[in-house]
Image (cartoon, rainbow, N blue to C red; front, side):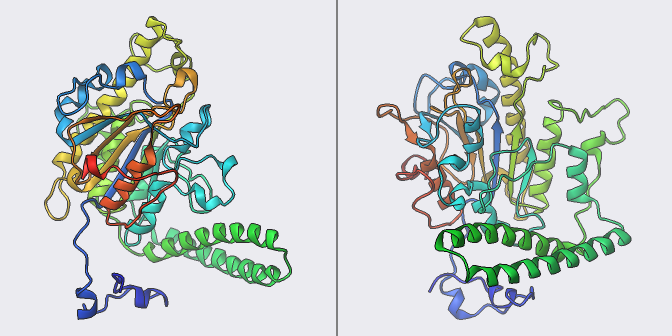
Length: 422
């Protein structure tokens, strides 16, 4: 018998009560998974290959120029060379394929677009207020219906979403809207069922895709209703205001809000508001307000190996690495409910679906994995077979298994990286 969640029996009728622990289920209860939370951080234009990938392999590699700030965490992270999404072409669109290894134009079934974070959210997000959070700049988180999930780039709005309770009148209006939306969905689903009998097989497939989207909305509405009257964790707003320190100014504009978002992510995990988070650094041609930067970000990524442009790009990407290093430090110092460092049970992925932005290449993706109970401390380089390297999805299979999910395949995977990380 498969391991059964004892809440399942009553969840179907809208009741959230826990049954006693029966011997039948106790006998099949699995040991706790090594990983319990997942975070993915993605710079839209990747990282400059010449400054990201170490020359040496194994544990004694020299930390490359862009990653110097991660030196203190080298025992808790792994760096990879020659990981690809073999089914993905080049161009800016490859940035959106990081967590699924698929392009929408190439799939027959929208469910193939389901991204790693949303698969984990389906498993880990059942008992949290938010099944997942998409922060910063979005595009690489995809639902089972093949829809890109939008991201929130406003730290103040994210803080309110996580920690500020709505007034009673607002809750009453929200409940009314939820009831109205649910009623509309009931009518839509009933009409769809009647229509299905009159459609061809091809059209029935299209209707099925449509119904998947409707079901996602239905689940979202149900979650909002379930949590509407549950008080949110109490948290001071010092993370976005600077607190009582008059000399401390918190800049909520990008890129300076990066540190604020990392703080919010730690708080969201620590309060168990969610267990799955994606955070994206935006693309575009914004002029970064850093000393030494004279051109827009996109222009710098198309450097053509010109030393002056690579030097400017390195300022931006060094900042990204420094902020990520600070995030890992915060996960180390923050404790979960059992008193363990959050990093021990949080699988963290840093990377991009774009390899070399200068040539719009989707090959040799810049990937770092950290925490999550995996064996770290090394640089792993894989051999290329012709044009292709090792599928990045092999790493995803290992990550899924760290969460106790018995998955042997994901996207374009050909195996797993358990021999390197477990």
